[in-house]
Length: 437
Ligand code: GLU
Ligand code: MG
Image 1 (tube, rainbow, N blue to C red):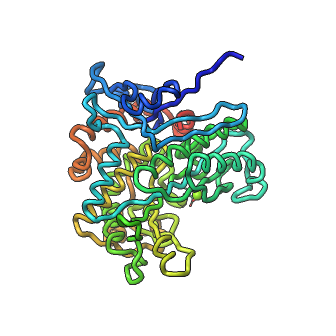
Image 2: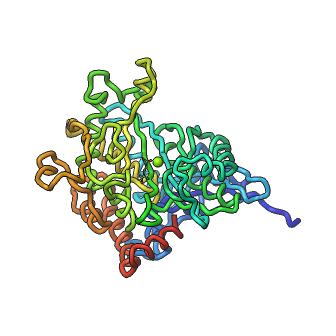
Image 3: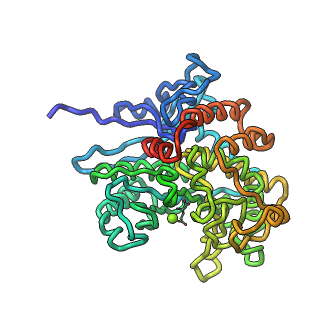
């Protein structure tokens, strides 16, 4: 056999929600932790179809992508290629965080939350994915046979999750054709988004090692259900004591949770372009798909954009720890870092504005007419990427959460993606996205 040099990939989850980076020989790690690898500003405009949108940077400039020693994923898959990467931060040559590094933007959002409330965020990403296998496995929603068919893949994936130091929660055959769902336990701050990236990469690699191909695309087929990314959030103080629950708060929410939820709902339309950022994301965000179609808070309601989740614990201490809210209007076309940054910024805005959450909805909102929706402050979420992009770039509050110029660059990035798909019908568009996510 030819000799091989082990390589480590240093990665950034970029505006396109793709994991990109460069590899270096593993024995250089110490040096690379200081110096990183070279990175190019215009890379930020490489979209999910490898097109390059108009870039303010052109061919100019240099950056560094620096691996984070604490954000490592390393797994071996027997005779199949393994996976070894570190999440990294993009910085300027002077070592300052770069304005378009999604991981840096998330750190800023988390700092702002902490400053406004003393709270640190715990988040757990729940991912749905589909195997591209033919013929599609039907009639096996939550089925044992459907699960058993991929037991080996599921067991390998769960082992890989433990191997990278994350906490597996559960895995199942989801409702859709060839659809599975993998759930992990909460992680603190930036690590939660790093974990989401790791889950996606581990799933792709595990599927590959089993002769399968996985896709996290927001929706494969409009006749079926979508692949959601549901983000469960709770808060702790600096000592790790829970801050999310209050026995006498509305639906159990503490004042902090209520204000955060209110902020997310108020700015939901403006952040959707960052959490559901593909053209086909909007085919998923329609009523009766158990995704999210309105800017509503739901109590244990799976059609809500923001859901107050049930707790199974009985003793008050565990209830306070388990209690969480779930953002359901996200998908895997979004960088987990950027999506979480946008949600945290919106929630923190709610805290700073002193908002309180509305009463949760408990009915099918698609049956309400426009006047009834309006009376209750409910809006149907934007139904195209163009519309949601517009609601982001024209919202002075939402754009102010990001560095100067961010909204314009993001808009150009996404407009180029929209143009690429403009002549395609929905099926062709779904096929295109399925090749990239
Ligand atoms: N597949 C649904 C979505 O697109 C979620 C179903 C569920 O787990 O409640 O978000
Ligand atoms: Mg699910």
